[in-house]
Amino acid sequence: MTYNKNHVAIALTLGIVLVVSVIAIAALQNSAEAQTSNPPKRIVGTIAKASQPHDAEGHSAHGVVYFVYPHEGYLYDGKVTFTTSVPVDILVYHDVTGQEDTAGLTLHKVNGQTYAVTTAMKGASSGTVEFVGAGILAHKVVGEGEDSAEFNAAASTFAYARKH
Image (cartoon, rainbow, N blue to C red):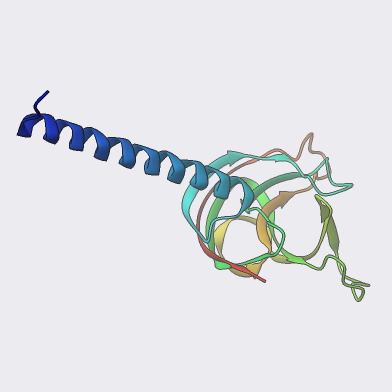
């Protein structure tokens, strides 16, 4: 059997397509695994969300929208501009898991981690917050005469994550 230039070109093209496909599939699998196991190094984007029950122990009657969800071992430095359907408190989390000198601090326990809480804004329905912490969220407690702590929020976030 004789091969001409066309046969060689077709075989070469098919080989290249196969190699590129295998590399692309491996890259997509690695990317998907990285997104589920590690937080992004940079968070840039806008969200619109309905509040969910707070996942902190003993706070399930409160409503929250996480602008940046805490990931163990990461510290975020950034800015959030937000608007909400009702006044909320903006809380910044600081991971103090395993530290002993936390007496007198407001603490939230979430997914086995302990966070000291800074109230960056109180009773706000819009604003911009610069923060450094393990996470940042909008938080609402059911007030007197209110039926629920539900609310809607929209926010734009720009933050960098650093492993500490």
